[in-house]
Image (tube, rainbow, N blue to C red; front, top):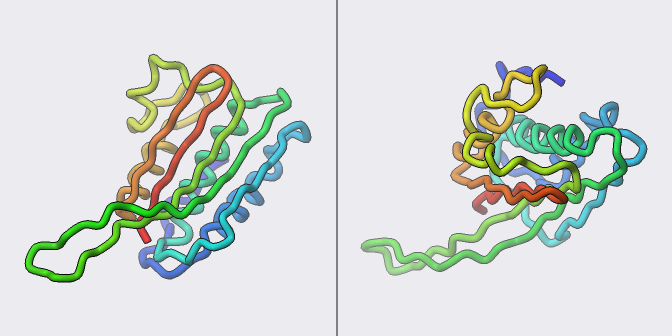
Length: 170
């Protein structure tokens, strides 16, 4: 699966994050084997957030593609979950009004083969891949895009489950 990175949108506008997750899944339908269950656990109360639509679809698609590759021809699941996270209130210098640091969390979890612990520090590095046919730019680009949105991306993994968590400010 190749992405066209040349025109990934240069401006942010309000988007429904659930719509972007569903577009990403639809983009990968041809790669899904019939034994992979797609589970949506979406928080229906989430507000739209100001993001670059095409860029965020690339992030979600990259992570979903890795989940599909990790499950391979086995049966498994990919769970996509969204949450509204109340962040800490931060005081801004010389301003009386406090500003909450709330964000939306997108969690993509699979029960594939997991990420080897020896690769934990490398997966977001450019050109790092455990697959011979890959260029190794997917997760590097994903982190770069999430950072450009003032968000964060992290993961947890063991032999039976991998979970990517994307946090985007509201």
